[in-house]
Structure formats: structure tokens, C-alpha cells
View 1 (cartoon, rainbow, N blue to C red):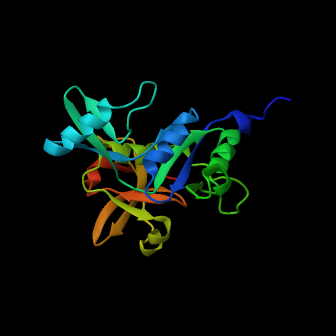
View 2 (cartoon, rainbow, N blue to C red):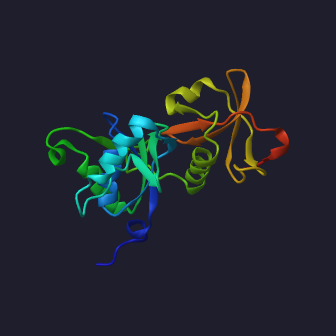
View 3 (cartoon, helix red, strand yellow):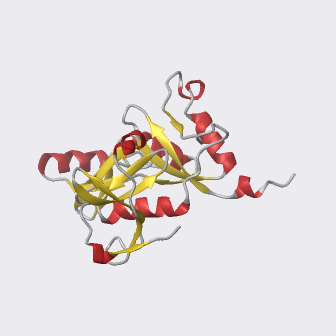
Length: 213
């Protein structure tokens, strides 16, 4: 029997991670052959921290993946620090995301729930992240990390709706979001609906264009 388009089409989904185990979750998803996105900052290690990380990376058994908390570029070692310690994104087909969800349940983890895949508001399936939301979130967390602030979906009720805009210049060019007044400042807010939102620091109005929906 042929699979439906929904079963073979890949979409982005959000996974809630418990116990700050985002790197373990990343490994689980990578071992399944899935593309992931974890918003992190690179912090260069020095002194004792550098030596400890170097020893850890040098002792990886043959055939095993190095500790994914660290990135080595020549003699320099960086530590990946999650911007959000409890959320990772995964690109998967409908069949694969069902398998991901199954692997997080107690019966698959020895009795401990590792997390869950975010579901739709009507609970009739898993919540697919619109491509533009994912693209804008990745753009902000990769190129605009200075001054970013993260908000849970529940916290957004405190901020009034604003005009939808697109960034037209600078490193965040192409990002789409809403201009919101947060703590007395007007900021660009990019939302992954039902999951999380990220707000930039101030962006000049001349670098924004309105979007008519």
C-alpha cells in the first residue's frame, strides 16, 4: 500500500524535554536519522575547562559519537550552551514523529518520561510548525543572539498584539514577526505558536516593512 503525502512529507515539530536532557534528546533523534535544531550559543573554553573537555573528546571510544555539548575547531574547543534548556525541534514525517513520541514514553525509557511532542490544540495529532515560523526562529537564534529574550506561550498573553513586519536589512533580513511593546520597549517578536517566542532587542523602523495578511 502506498503512503499518503502526509506520511512522506517532512515537517518541523517541537519536543518538550524534561530534566535538562536536551543533548541526550538530540542524540536520540540523530540516532533515528532525523534532522534536529537546538538553539545554542558557542562559549569558548579556556584553562581547566578547556583541558577537561579535551580529555573527554580524546577518550571517545571508536565508533561512538563525540559528546555533542562540545565543538572542536583545531585547538579551540567551544561548549554549546542551550538558549532554551527544555525544547528541541525535529524534522520528521508523520510516521517518524509517531515513533519519536513512542520512544519518549516510560515503557521505552525504563520508566522515566523524557519528554513529549507538542500536540495540536484540538489534540487530533502533533502540531506542525509552519515553515516561516521555523525559519524566522532559526534566523533570530543563529544571528541575533545578543539581547534575545524567550517567552513561553502562556506568557504572551501579557503582551498586546502588534503589526506584522518583515526585516529588510541586516543579519536578520527575512525574519517575520510582530512588533510588540515588552517592558516599555518595542521589540520584534517571533512566535512558534503554542510553543515558544523569542524577542529581539530594538530594531530601527527603517529596517522593517509591514506585512499585510
